[in-house]
Length: 552
Ligand code: ATP
Ligand code: MG
Image (cartoon, rainbow, N blue to C red; front, side):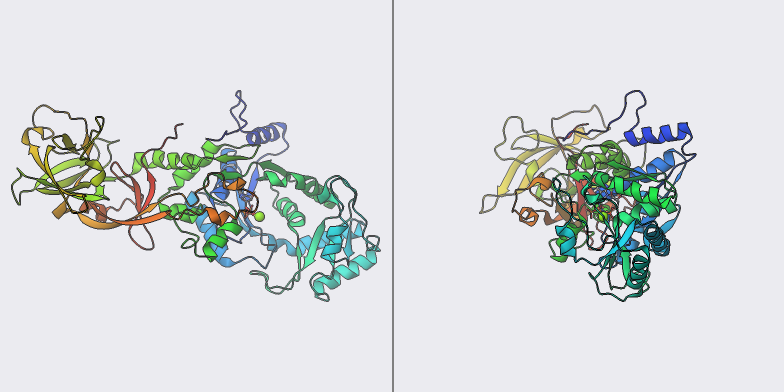
C-alpha cells in the first residue's frame, strides 16, 4: 500500500483539521463549527466525494456543529436535476443528514450586489478583451501580465456596463467582469481574475433570469461566508486559490470563512474524475453511472458495498496533506471487515462438477445445520440438504495433485463442510479430458456431533444437486489493468487500459435459502466471497473475494 500520511499528532491523536478546529474553539474564535459539502451537480458522486462527505459531516458531528449541503450550480451548461437527486440520495445512504439544502444560485442576487460594491470601491472593472486576449496578457510565472486597456474605466462606466451585461445587451464573450488586483502578482490567479462571464443558457433552477454567471472563485467563498461556514474544506489543488478566497472576503468586509485544504483521494486501478466517468458512461464502456465496476457511490452500492464499509475506509485513509494513491485493496478490506461481522452465509458452487456418493442410498436426504454467521455460533442456523449427488467446485478436485493439495484427489479424503468426510474412489473424464463426474464413498462415523471428531486436512463447500437453485453470478474484476491510472504515459489514453475481463457472467448453484435471504446486505458464499443480488438485472454481484494480500 502507498504511504498514508494522516498527520496525526501523537499527543492529541487528531488530524490537522481537527487540531485547527480545537484551537479555534479553545481560543473563542468560534463557538461552534459549520461545514459544508459543495458538489457541482454535473455528475454522480464517487468514492473521493465520499471521503469529503465523511470528513465534513464527521467534523460537524464530532464538534457539535452542522453541515450544509450546497450545490455549486454556477455553470448552467453542465448541470442537471438528475445529478442533484442522485447526490442527495447518495449522501443519505452514506448515513449523513445535512442541516440545510442550499444552492449557490440562491445567492446570485447577493453576489451581484457585492460585485457592484467592489466596482464602487474601484476593485472591479468590465473588460472588453476577448478570452484569448485575456489569456495572452496574463503573463507567465516568470513574467508579469499586461494591464487591460479597459482597466481604468470609471466607476460610473463600469456600473453601467455591468448592468447592461446583466440585462442581456451583450453576446457571450463580449465582456467580462474582473477583479482589479495586480497584473504582476506572483500568484497568477491574483492577476485580475474573472468574476463574471456572460452565458446565454437556461439554468436548471433560475431559468432565464440570469445571463451573467459568477466564476467559482468569486462564488465559493462568498457562499461560505453567507452561510457562516467556519471551516471550508477543499482539496489540495485549491491552495493557490486561497489568497483570492481571502481577498474577496476581506474587501467585501463579510463573515471571515476560512479555507483549508487536504489531499484528494486517489485509488489504484480506477479513474476518479467526473469527466472521465461520464465518458465511460456515454461510450457504453460501462452500463451506467451505477455499473458495479464504477468507483461511484451508486456503483459501489449496487456492487454490495455498505455505508459502514465506506465510512470505515474514509477513516482509515485519514486526512493527508500530500497527494497519495490509496490501494484499492484497503477499500475491499473495509468491506470484508464489515460484512464478515454482519453477512449471512450460504454455499454456492460456481464451476460445478458432479460428485456422486456411491454408498449413499438413492433418494435418501439428510439435513445438516450450519450457522448463518460463524462469528455468532449460537446465533440463527440454516438447514442444508445432503443427498447422493452433489456439486463441488471443479478446482476442488485434482487428478494429479501436488503433495500439499489438501482438497479432493484420487484416494484422498475431504470433509464436505458441515457434513461427512468423503473419499474419492473413481472419476470419469469426457473426450476433452475434463473430469465430469467424481465418485466417492462417505464415512458414516464422520457425522458432526455423532462420536469423536475425525479431522482431515481439507474442507470444501458443496450443494446437493436436487436441493440447489440455479443462479447467475456477475464476477467483477478491476475496471482498469493499470495500477497507477494517474501516471499513465504521456500521449496514452486512459481508455486503452480498460480491463476487457472486468465482467464475467456465470451460472452457479446455490443453497435454496439464499433466494429467501432478506438481510438487505451482501451475503457470503462460503470460501468464495461476498455477493449482493443485483438491484437492476437480478443475479448476484461479486462485491469482493474473501481474502487478499492486504493486511492492516
Ligand atoms: P471531479 O474532479 O471528480 O469532477 P470535483 O472536485 O470537480 O470532482 P465537486 O462536485 O466540485 O467535484 O466536489 C465536491 C466536493 O468534493 C469538493 O469539496 C471537492 O473538493 C471534493 N472532492 C472531489 N473529489 C475528491 C476526491 N477525489 N477526494 C476528496 N475530495 C474530493
Ligand atoms: Mg469541481
